[in-house]
Length: 378
Image 1 (tube, rainbow, N blue to C red):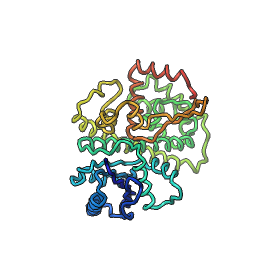
Image 2 (image 1 turned 135 degrees about the vertical axis):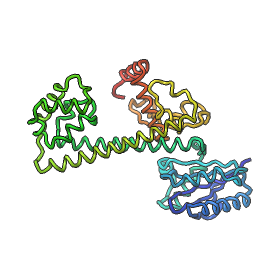
Image 3 (image 1 turned 60 degrees about the vertical axis):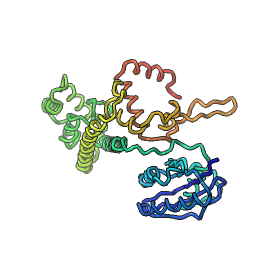
Image 4 (image 1 turned 180 degrees about the horizontal axis):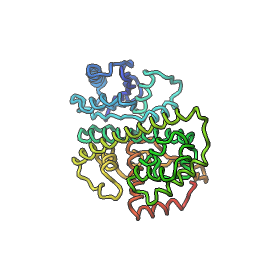
C-alpha cells in the first residue's frame, strides 16, 4: 500500500515555504522555508529524503501554487531530480483560484505563507487532482513564444481600446459612420493624425482629402471621393471639444498609435520565430482552413501529448472551456457560466482558431450560424 508525503509549497521570488503532510493529515515536521534558488532546492530535497526514510514513505506528491513564473524552476527541478524518481513523484501546479476556493472550506485559516503552504498540502491530500506537471523540453521554446505572442496581442487590444476612447473625444462620429473598414489602417491613421481638429477636416477641399486617401491606401478605394465625403460628413456631425484639448488629444492619439505599431511589429517578428519553431512538429492541424502556423503552434504547445487526456471533455476542462451546471430539483438554469479555471493560453488559441475556421470554412460558418440562431440569449 502506498504511503504518501503530501508536500505543499507556497512559492515566492525570494523563498519557498513548505508544509509536509502524511496521509492522515499529520505534519511530518514543522513547516519551514528555503531560498527559491538552486542551493535552496537542493536543501529541500535532502529534507524530503529524510522524511521519506523516517516514515517509510514510498510516494511523493508536490503541490505548488502557479504564481507568476516563480514556481517554474522548482517544478522542473523536482521532475528531473533522479533521487526522487523511486518515489513516483508527481508535481501539481495549482491554479491560485482553485487554492483560494479550497481554503474557504478550512476553518480559521488566515493569510500567510505558512498557512498557504498548509492549504496547498491539504488540497493534495484531498485528491481529485488536475493533470500533473509535465516537463517536455521539446515544446518549451514553442510554448514560450506562443505565450509571449498571446501577451503581445492582449497589449495591442488594450492599446486599441484606449485609442478608441480618446478618438471619441476628438471625432465622436468617426466610428458610428465607419468610413473605413479598419480604423487602424494607413488611410484612417493619416486622416486622424494629419488634421489637428475636425473643423480642419470640414474645411479641407474634397479633392485634397480624396488625394490623401488614395495615396495612403495605395489606390485601393474604388471611390476615394465617396470615402472623403463620408469622412467630412462625420466631421460635421461630431461634437467639438474645447480648443485647449486639441493638442493634448492629438499627442495622446499619436503616441498610442505608435505603441500599436511597435507592438504589431514585434508580433510579426514573433510570428516568424513561431513558424520556424513549428517546423520541428509534423502535424495535420495546419490542413484545417483558417488555422495558420500561429494558431497551430499555440494549440500544440499547450496540449503537447494528446494522450494525456482520456477524452474531449477532459481536454475542454483543461482549457477552461466548459459550462458549470446550475440545477436544483426540477429547475435547470438556462444561463450557465463558462468555467475559465483552466489553461488560459490554450483557451485563447482554441477560441481564436475556431473563429478563424468559422470565417474561412463555409461549412463551419453555416454550422456556427445555425447554432447561434438556436438561441441568441442563453
